[in-house]
Amino acid sequence: MPLLRSAAFRQRQNCLIVRKCQPRNETDAIRRFVTWAQVAGQMSDVDSAAVRAAVDKYESAIKQALDRLDDTIRTLAGLPYVRIFGLDDAMLPRSTELALAGIAPEPFDQAILAGVLVSARRLWDSGEREISFCEQDGDLQPFGKSGANKRLLKDAFDESHVWVYGDFTLSGPLRPNGFE
Image (cartoon, rainbow, N blue to C red; front, side, top):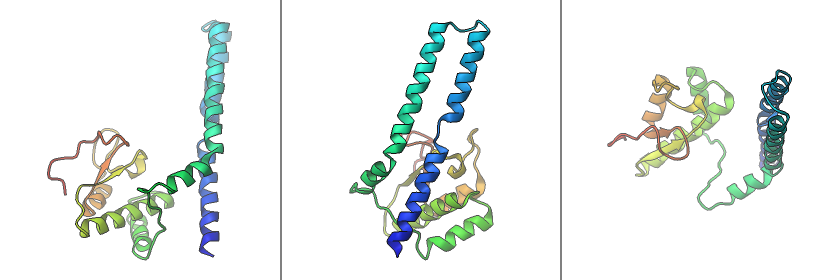
């Protein structure tokens, strides 16, 4: 039974990813601009053809990547340094606490945040130090675009001894010396 649920969950998540990652809005906006610019005499036929060709290639590349999504997830899941886990008896109530405190706005964010915070706390308790989380989703970053802290979210990460980077290059924000 758990395998059926996890397969169904994965399928729902893939559908969500596929739905949210469609480039149609952006590409349609670019195509409308090119049509307007061409009619207005702001863009030549050669330039508009080049832009349309680039947009078509962009759209095609994304669709191909989405078509390979299941294979990509399977490949990632098979890597020796990736551990996939379900929410456990400590993470589920933590997710509810986050929801009730208004810390994470969406159920999926609450689940991710609960998994990160509880796992980080376990790592810390087992002696690990310098625990980091890389996140590009602004809803899960403890800092706003201007760099101001989102106090409740920052406090939750700090309590679990997690430093949050705003991307996957580990370049920023800089981890302060002695952060624990």
